[in-house]
Length: 359
Image (cartoon, rainbow, N blue to C red; front, side):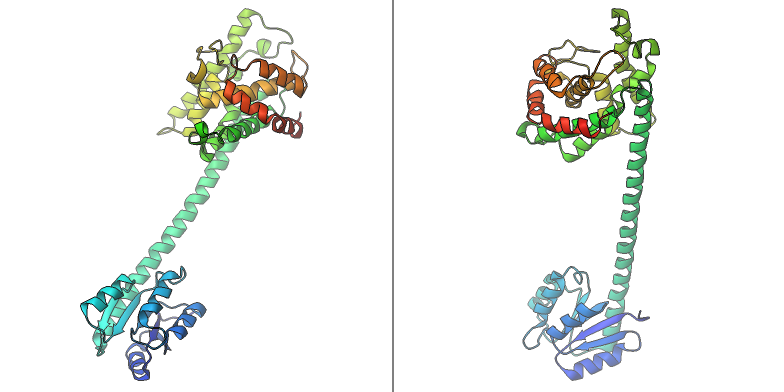
C-alpha cells in the first residue's frame, strides 16, 4: 500500500520524463513509461491514480493509448492529462473527445503541471469516495431488501398457517397451491396474450400471495369448517363469507402501510375472487369471464385441483385422473377455458408437485 498517489508519465523522450519526475516526485509516487505499450502493461499490473500522456510517440501514439485506457472497464475512469506540443484547437478537441480530463501544452510549466495534477487527483478522490459510498449503500439496500423479503415470506407463511391449522387435513396444501399457481402462470406467460401481464416479477408476486387465499377461514366456526358431511344451505352461506373476511383482513393490514403494496393487492384479489366462476355463478360477487382477476382465475384451478386430490373431513382423496376429468368438465363454466387448456397441457407437472409435497 502506497502512502502517495501514483502518477504514470508516458513520453518517448527521456529528458521530458526526467523533468516531469523531478517536478512531481516530492508529492507523488512517479512511474515512467517510454511508450504506449509499456504504459498499458503498467496499468495492467498495478494501481495508478492519474496518467500524464504525450501524444506524438512512435508505434502507438497517445490517442491510441487513451482509446485503450477508456475501453478497459478497469481503467475507464482513470484521469488522463495530455501533455504535448500539439496545440491546435483541433488537437485539443480530439483529445477531449477521446476522454482526456485536461490538455497541457509544452513547454512544461512546473506550477501549471502541479496545479492541474493536484486538481484532478482531488476530483478522482471525491469521485472514488462517492463510488465506494454508492456501492456500500447499494449493497446495504440489497441486504435490507433481502431481509425484508424473507420477513415478508415468513409473515405470509405464519398468516396462512393460521387458516390451515383450523383444518388438520390440509397438510402441504399451501406449498402445493403456491407451486401450482407459479407453474401455471409461467406456462401462460409463453402466450402472446399474457406475456406482458405475466412478467417474472408478477409471477413471483402471485407465488407469494397465493398462501393467503383462504386466510378468511379463521373467521369460520369450527362446527362448519370441520363438519364431516355436507353443509346445509345456511352453513354454506356462512362458509362463503371466508372470501370477504380474507379480503377485509388483508385490506386492513394494507391500510397500515403508506402506499400500495403490490403483493397485498394481488393477495386481496385472490382471497376475494378465487371462488368466482367463469360463467358468473361463483361468489361472493358473481363476477364472470375476465371480470375475474387473472390471479384469481389461476388460483381457482390450483385450489380446486388440490382440493379434489386431497383427503378432507367430508371426503376421500380422488386420483389425479378423476380430478382432471372434473376440471375438464368445468372448462368454460367454472374455469377460464383458455387457462384450463394450458393447465391440461401441463397436468403432469401438477401431479409431480402433488407427489413431491404429498401429505
